[in-house]
Amino acid sequence: MSAPDSKTRLAGLIRDAVQKAFPEAGDVAVELDRPKNAAHGDFATNVALQLAKKAGKKPRDVAEAIVAALPRDAGISKTDIAGPGFINFTLSAGSRFAVVADIHRQGAAFGRTPSGGDRKIMVEFVSANPTGPLHVGHGRQAALGDCIAALLESQGWRVTREFYYNDAGNQIATLALSVQARIKQARGEAAEMPKDGYLGDYIREIAREYVAEHFGDAAGNNLEQIQRFSVDYLRKEQDIDLHAFGVKFDSYFLESSLYTDGKVDETVEALKKAGHTYEFEGALWLKTTDFGDDKDRVMRKSDGTYTYFVPDIAYHLDKFRRGFAHVVNVQGADHHSTVTRVRIGLQALDMGIPKGYPDYVLHQIVTVMKGGEEVKISKRAGSYVTVRDLTRCITCSTRTRGCAACCASGVATWPRSPAPTSPRSRRPTRRPSRRRCPNSPRCSPARRRNSRRISSRIICTTTWRRACTPTTMPSGSWSRMNA
Image 1 (cartoon, rainbow, N blue to C red):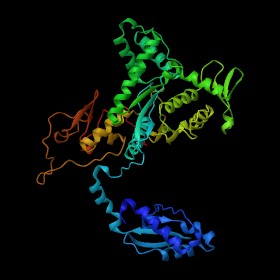
Image 2 (image 1 turned 135 degrees about the horizontal axis):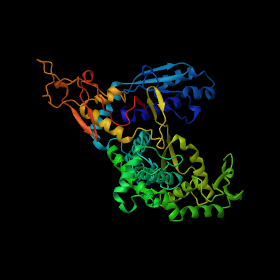
Image 3 (image 1 turned 180 degrees about the vertical axis):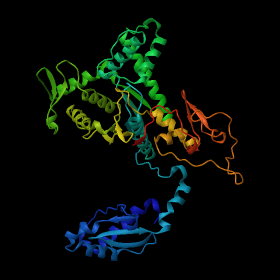
Image 4 (image 1 turned 45 degrees about the vertical axis):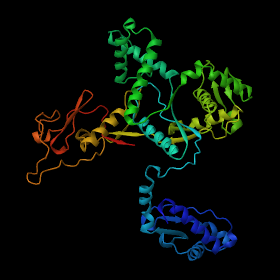
């Protein structure tokens, strides 16, 4: 019994044993799970509990009959019955490690199948608002989405990775007003930040870059131009971070194009034509209760603006028309309400879009801790840990066997192996640098050998953490990060 198909083969043996012991039972679905306790074996099944009522026997008696009917197999070293009737199986060592030979034999083809049939599928992920740097929450989604895409590719699907830019709406207008306020403040003008404005230091940086490139509007009066520049600037910064993170996209889609190309209006008209809308108190409503929702939802508010799920419906209609009959959206758990409304909206169009389209993978929100307390991630408040900071710390750690700056601050538990030593002297074999350690006057010359510059900060990367107490830290360093 070779490891790659051990579970399938074992299920087949159990199925045959059930037919032999209880021929009147018919086809039985055999489910195998990994026991929580490794001492209970490699696989366990509750098939005896399922059959007990049909067989008219106690579950444990059914389990004993199934075990007695099992043929001898070199892949199974032990079988035992636990509790009310669970059957535990322990595989032989040869069966468990047969996968190693298969991996060597198949090489890069191991685990790949053509089951996808070269069918098109889109995986949309990250899709961050271009209103600030990518934070660690976006990093989690980038890793998850890219893994899902790679897995689908390995199974024969033709995958398109897409990034949806939310470059329209109130948050973009607030971004432009925030940058404009910083431009005017830098000129000595008494300009207030807008309500719910973005307060991060990156807004000042955008303001400086804008003035440097637009001499004709150094006073920051052209708000539309500021908005375009700010969005483009942040998009480029996000692309740099994603590239450093090892994630690439095949296509980018702008939310603003849904309005400029008339796709939002077209979608609304299609919903009206299908008879699933009505006017009430100056607003346009979608009859979501016709599709099982607890109440109808507003599509267009009385001021003429659309609610957030309307462009989402238009966007997914566009995906379907582009030939993507299969779509996976990776989003945070805070978007759970979007799932039902987008699916209902697509069904209400009466355009033959499959029920349950698109598929969603929702992930939990990243929790950041500082001093034992949770820190709220907020681009508006300027409180976050960026993907760039995280990537730099990981790079620093992997290259030097542990970043002392990160270790000392408790950002994460980086490996802290001691430097290799000579058998005679017990001193580091690498010749020490004479450069003074920028982080601590207490570092001995032998312990100053490793430092590197990250952006404008010097970070000690010596592995001798006991003797080096860094005084400069990378931006966004927190006491602990839980993801």
